[in-house]
Length: 95
Image 1 (cartoon, one colour):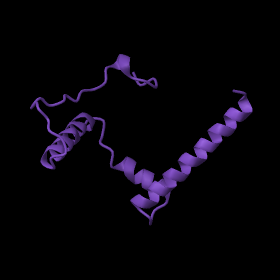
Image 2 (cartoon, rainbow, N blue to C red; image 1 turned 90 degrees about the vertical axis):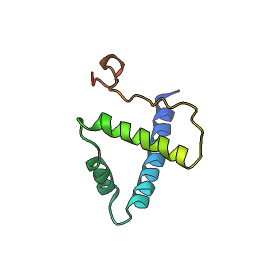
Image 3 (tube, rainbow, N blue to C red; image 1 turned 180 degrees about the vertical axis):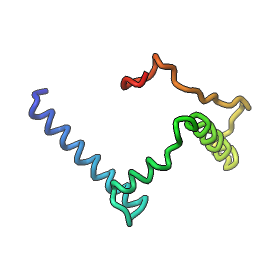
């Protein structure tokens, strides 16, 4: 694909995604700007030390919800193990 049409396609996708971001931010908190909503969400993010335990709790809570509401039947009592991604499998130079 030539660079011009590729750039136009990318800019169109960016505009669509930004509009969706703004709409979602308004749904979360109409009194705040999209940037303020994003900041509030990042402030609520677990610390690095609490990330693995936090995710493990959320996975267990999701499982309990699905079972309690009878959305799914889980035939095994074996729980998923939440562990850190090995350095060799990380992307973005975080290893």
